[in-house]
Length: 486
Image (cartoon, rainbow, N blue to C red; front, side, top):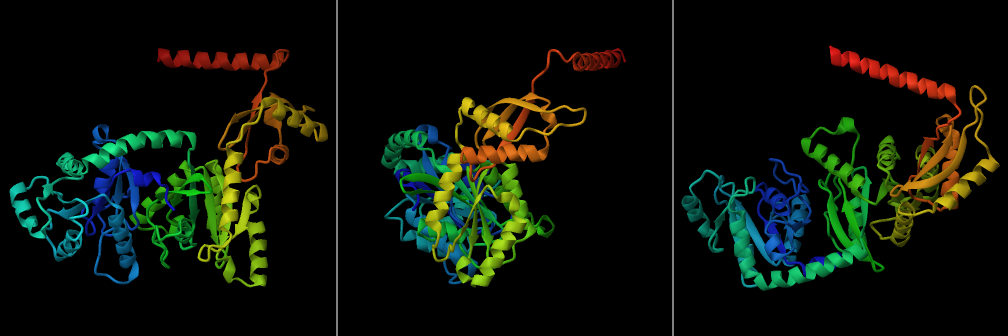
């Protein structure tokens, strides 16, 4: 279930046939680039929510809901699923902004949508906005669209912002009381969010592994389109929900294929959105299809999550449809191909049947707690000294033995431990892994990457090294003077 805070804010739904500029207007109203925009029909498919920023200084916060191209007469296929999403958004909305295209004029498709919206006029405001009207005679344009029977239309340009304020003023006048109440509520909501900041969870993986199905299973409703067709999800959709009195933001992302198989510009935009969602989340759930072979692409996605420093939970989906032998083989392949993810908890679930979802979010909470943990410096140093006492660093060339002296925490999400000492740049990768595993075990850092940084302490008695540093600095100064003379 979505967070109740959304219901306290008045919502404006953008409705219209494909490619009339709904996503462009959504980005303008929210002052963001959250919705993918391209001159291609049917780009938006799921409902996309955002906080309205334009005119919010006068009227308080409000929700803007972007929808896919509305095909009310289609009864099957992906277009039918998009229509269901739009109809649900219309039911949620306090006001509806019906976008039409000034360049194409009124179409039979517009008339079908208008007939559906006219039934709602008594319940909520329905405003017609004629988009792409820049450079055209406004009187001539408006005359044609009176035929829709939805009152006086407005001419706007979502790209340039012309006329958008006028439309908002008209809508806000009809919802003035609601918007006044929402302004008071928004302050309370923002205070609550500071105290109980939601955990942002991105669900990522290859195409058609069940990401949207998992989102719907967690929410208990068909919030996003789950269709048996790779590439159904194109944008990164953020959805607030509450589980066990904890606030989360779920991010449904587009499936990521191998780079060599990505040809369409839409898919490239979708992949960029997915990568941004990973970088901006607190915890990533890597979803793997148990009924498909575990591929190198799964490992590449996992590696990007680690490089981004995000906490991680591995969820193997479609587990219910496998035999005992197939399950055993999958576990063997997981251990072989994703061995570098041994710090993350691996769970076996069925999104379609909602099996294993409680354990999934227990693991998400544990990973988030580990990523945000704060460790006192004395404890870290004590664990470091105990680890050295059990196994000292190996000597390197010249008989030098690296000497870590103390350590402290340098950051969170992911946790960073900074080592101080002598000759630490000579520590071997295997010894750093030993220290990492020690810190992870003692401080229970399961589910999060752990970074170790080394800082060398200068030895005041190492005259040779001091002379080398002076010579290097002198040579740099000389070369700089020569350049300046030239």
